[in-house]
Amino acid sequence: MTRIKVCGITRVEDALAAAHSGADALGLVFYEKSPRHVTVRQAAQLAAVVPPFVMVVGLFVNPSEDEVRSVLRQVPLDMLQFHGEEAPEFCAQFGRRYLKAARVKPGVDLLQCAARYTSAQGLLLDAYIEGTPGGTGAPFDWALIPHDLPLPVVLSGGLHAGNVAQAVREVRPYAVDVSSGVEASKGIKDAAKIAAFINEVKRADVQLSG
Image (cartoon, rainbow, N blue to C red):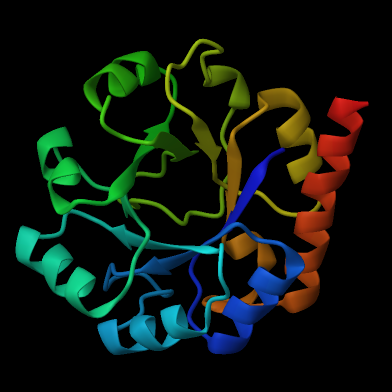
């Protein structure tokens, strides 16, 4: 069964809509340059309403150690997600499981990346857009993903209800990650788009199991 993460949550109603529609994880962005950035206070309020068994994931881009520890003291994050050039030793020091994002383009060696980040719980694969660490809303060529990656794949980048079923069938990822594909505007989710996205993932899972 393909897991589902809805990232870039900024409002309580969006967190609840995603959780009630069946999302397995919600992503909170602690990168100030992102239009989906939340303050620590906002993040704590959001985490407080998340129902049981839904994970809260904190997204960082080249943070300082103090920044991550400060967030962790105030927000009950279940998992960390690193989108910059963070070293494996940096990512693994916080006592939380983590995902390492890799921006995919021809020539990027994902097997080498997986070998370097053996302490990660998975690789989050996103599109490579120059100067943008993530949340691009752009897809990439899924054929660039090796079939023998030793880490679980979290597929991101330009996913929406219109293409996620195909992505699940072609890539067979452990999880899919969506942000802009379920938005009414940047940082504002659309409950109907979230529900449609999750329904398409589940439809693809049924087709694969059948």
